[in-house]
Length: 235
Image (cartoon, one colour):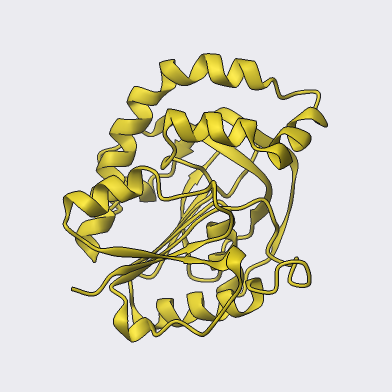
């Protein structure tokens, strides 16, 4: 069976509960650890799908992170092949860029737990149908994307208009993190680069995020299980 290719930008941002869904479906997956350097172009004819994970960089930092430019080409190839493609946070922004849309600062950073509203179109979507329209999700981003031409908006929030979209039948971009576990959130809050980012923001309290996590995780786990099992079925 062909594996799902996972594009990983930093060691601490992993599949999380996406891995659970893939394992339950008995789908193999393999990480391409881009932070270790690029050795060769992946052969996407040998992939069953693609997951593009998050990271602290922005899509245009191609000098500091030279893997970003070819990665956009790989994402576009996966989309053109019709593979199931899922992008999370930075991954969603890279998908938007691969589809010709602008990626820019959001104006305010969302870090922690935030409300989200699904669009009417999401109620008919193969991943999101049947989900509550008003959700609380985990966020960690400062940039956002414009909707690519032909994309269907699936979610928005008060602080960020474009939170999710579908392109065609098989490509999904989620600005938010429903893949996180409680342990991942703790790890992210303890990561030195992340700690510096949060320390520079008067509006973000790491301890408040930790305190709220046990309350929010059951609903997030239920949501992620439903969505990612459906994504796994696409592959």
